[in-house]
Image (cartoon, rainbow, N blue to C red; front, top):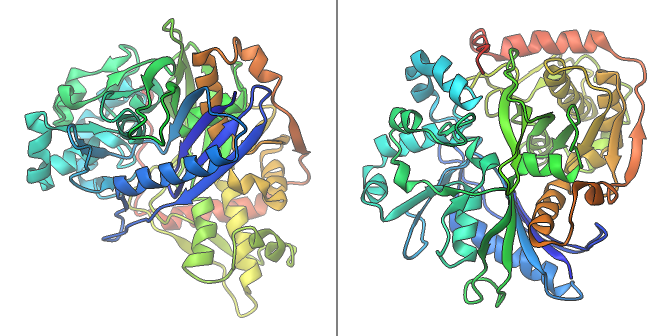
Length: 490
């Protein structure tokens, strides 16, 4: 019997049936709508996420040889979701991780940043869930009154999906998602009363924190496609990808190339405090309570920049076309693109930064701009990796990792090999691995490691440091002010 993995991403939901030997037997995918009501605002309708989940899972199940033995969940992180505890209906749209509306709240709270960073390993940035909840409390009082009264539950996408899958029986989250909210204490491994008070979030509205695998809940047949199976694994998408890449050793590092790009370095049981704009996060927690931590660099817009070339500018018809078009020119012709379309994340952390294209001449073609976009992704990841401890190899996954030109540019810029696995949907694979461990499909991490297979290794060639210098200059122009110095406490 296989494991059903639900990957509720930023633009759609993927469902996989993963077999005991780590193969993908079947899959389903369903997109859902993105809403941009104002500049810098990004919202999702929670019901759309749920309906996409049902659709994607239905497709995957129809292609499976037998019903699944268990369910694993992974999700876009930091997105704030509210729902009625009784009806499970959402009183408002979810505020997505990309949303920048809380920049003013973050600036107001700056006097507390050192303590916040010490407790959470994070920064005061609109990226995280906590200030989104503060914004709702201050700007949507009719919605927030349900939270205060106890009728409305608060959570992230994982919590919302588990509530829907169990017909409201379970209101839970896991440490990997909780550690992205600005409300969770890394050392205490629990919701922190001081943080909740600072951000105005009632602690009793928050979900129970459970380990990343083990008994989490059971799907309700009346709610979920007639299935009654255990939910036995859950993790935020980037931590799930680290697990799916079998990065179980200290120093193992992966980069997921999706809507954004996210670099995680396994630091084992130690809470490592970065000093160069990175974050500290929980990678996963075992049922026995053992916690693995990670350093993370979050780049907000990478694959989304390619989508913008397609949907916003009409320069390409499909995202995969970007490689062929970019290969028609030897370089970007001096064009530099800083895709700060929703601000800049690590290591710059400027929520007010906006996108910038420089170096345009009469000779500039769409191919130059497309190639500059791929180069920008490689430069953004290099910015983050230069702030991490030295690495020997980067494991790559996510949709854009199928772009061979991008992977070669990345290896060149980092000066280390980039390894791409056969299964590039490692976020969903990680959720399946966690669920399988929780339900006894697999017994050890070593068993899982044997299922990882290399598709291609990209060895580094000559590095174009001149282009990178131009990139760094362009980033300085895109930022509205000098980025705040990263606290040595977090």
